[in-house]
Amino acid sequence: MSLLSVKCKLIPDASTAEKLSRTVNQFTQACNYALQVARRDNVWNTFALQRAVYRELRERFGLSANLAVRAIARVGKRKGHKVGGFKATSVDYDQRILSVNLDTEVVSLSTVDGRVKVPMRIAGYQRHLLRSARSIQGGQLVRGRDSWYIHLWCEYDDPPPITPKGFLGVDLGIVNIATDSDGETYSGKHLNSVRHRYRRLRRKLQKKGTKSAKRLLKKLSGKEHRFANDVNHRISKRLVVKAQRTGRGLALEDLRGIRERVRLRKPQRATLHSWAFRDLVRKLQYKAERAGVPLVFVDPRNTSRQCPACGHTDKANRPTQALFRCVVCGYSGLADHFAAVNIGRRAAVIQPNAGA
Ligand SMILES: [Zn+2]
Image (tube, rainbow, N blue to C red; front, side, top):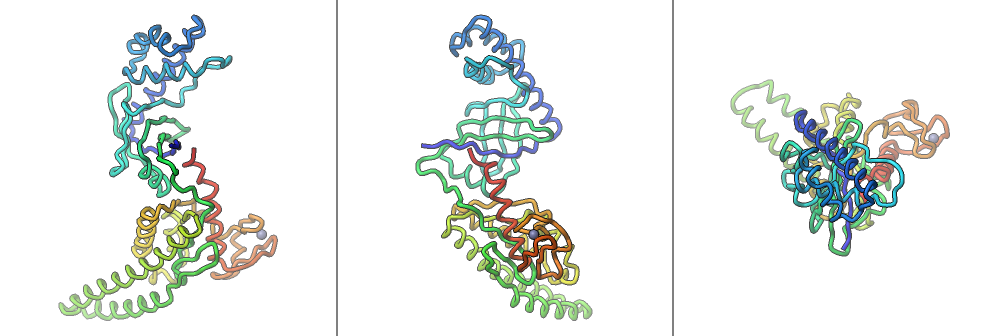
């Protein structure tokens, strides 16, 4: 059996955030009060301490029975620590006062103002860890500088879920629909020529504007969809199989990056159907999840401008659309490949977020 703490971002609305804040504050004050009593009377045994402070914690600090028990348990662990009280940053939860709906990805927490439901914002890797857990034992609510997190304590049967040995970075593009950090390309040449043909046809039909032209248009877009759908199936399958075979996770730019790309490459803008990209991302997510391959999204900023050898980031590193040549160290290669390498590395850096 193994335990893993999985960190998930919470997105509470304003009134829920206020309730969470009050709970963190009250819980911390209760902990500090119990700590005072424990020190004064030298009572660290949880049951003895509970007898001494339980009523106070309920009445003075407004904690529910279970939250009071969690506060006392936290203080009990402090025995032997000489300095410091507790800072108001977190609350401990057990299974009775925390539950997770994996379908809706909503966490239910008890607060000093009753139960609240808070949506999580998680990526494929966390989803994989949560869904493969035998049970979720509870967690810790954490208030960050301007965001909320829940660290969920997940319990697994042995063997624990796969921990990736690195990440296969994937850069999504237009000429090549995908390029991975090993340098393999997943071509969209054929797809693009088909799209061009369809686009010309569509323009003609739109000009006509007759009933039969409209009917043809509809049929055309259906064909186009099916074609892209098929290409995306094949590409996503190849990528997931490769990651699985080599024991790696998959890393992609988040959607911000894909939008950015659409904006940057104006000449090809018309070629690119953003739905086809979103569809590819969805297929990758779905297939990766089914294969137990962690998939993470990384910050897309400058992935195509940063030198993978020396780290120098510069627009001038890109003499052409296809080429990368670092103006500082001279390292050069295919731009899409280098972008994929950067994406893979960024995933390796953020991955411990979800680890123990
Ligand atoms: Zn360089």
